[in-house]
Length: 217
Image 1 (cartoon, rainbow, N blue to C red):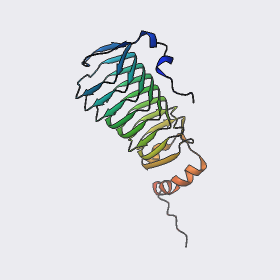
Image 2 (cartoon, one colour):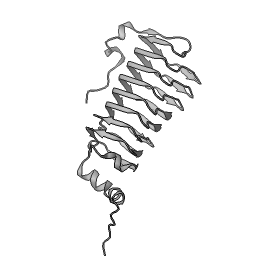
Image 3 (cartoon, rainbow, N blue to C red):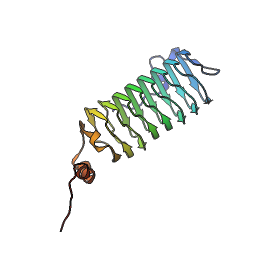
Image 4 (cartoon, one colour):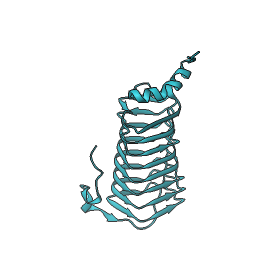
């Protein structure tokens, strides 16, 4: 897995211009750099960011439903209690960031990489993830219920209390995850690849799912 890029490595870095002021609903933001800013309670649904960068930005309790993030780079960004439902993400890189108490149901993520991020209590139900990598991340209480996962990997990541109920998986590789803590929706793992040691850890849940009683007399 390639190392995360720095701001100066971005092909559009020399085009970036500082963004000042609020974000607006249906706003169109191309080649902007948001740096060291806090947005609290912002209503900016259906806005669009393209070839843009975010550094040390905090989003708190805002609504960005239906927003689009196209070819964006985010470093040390905090999303807290924010509505990102039905958003679209393509060619995005998210580094050393935190997403906590998030609504991301119905989101579309394509070619997105999370590096060293923390996702805590994130609702990704019915989302569609394609070619997404969680690298050295912590996923705690993340809900993938009813989501579609294609080409998703978790190298070096820890999963705690993750739910996959009625998820649909294709080419999902969990073998390099450091810990595979799945608390519900084990049937949703169909189509995923796991390692032998992970299988042993999940065996009691699989037995319960299949109605098998394991007893040594």
